[in-house]
Amino acid sequence: MFYCEECRKKNKWPEGFAVSRGPCEMCGKTATCHDVPSCALPDRKEKPVAKKKSKKPVELTPADEKRCQCERPNGATFMTFGMAPGLVRCKNKPIVVVTEREATHEDGERGSMSLCPHCYNKFIERMGDDFATVRAIEREGEDKGV
Ligand SMILES: [Zn+2]
Ligand SMILES: [Zn+2]
Image (cartoon, rainbow, N blue to C red; front, side):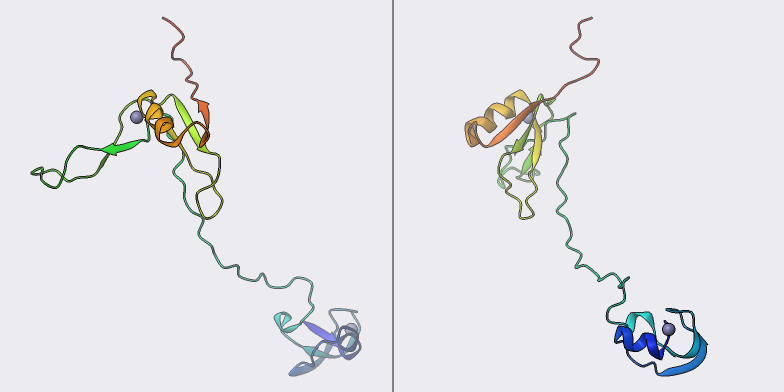
């Protein structure tokens, strides 16, 4: 920023380290002007954008309408040779997408997942009817009869 003494006083801007003669960027008058980096001006309108703390949004898995997103124990235990205990994803086709009524994630996002009839029944058994809202998955080109 290049401004004359008059404009400097008017805006209460700092005196520049370098001073030279030229047209003032504020009033256009040719005068002895202060040459100051714009970012050094306290009340400049276009302030350099303050870097926001990048809060990484929690990536929620979008509901997969093609395959049930339920995971259930694969039946293996650590005693089962060659098989790791853990969860396997259900392979059934989902019929509904359930979405939490109350956000359980820290950022207030509500998780949702697709469930097949079997897993949906289990889900209701475990969580109850009120835990989530349920949306039926509509399939185009299916169930229309042959
Ligand atoms: Zn000026
Ligand atoms: Zn399932």
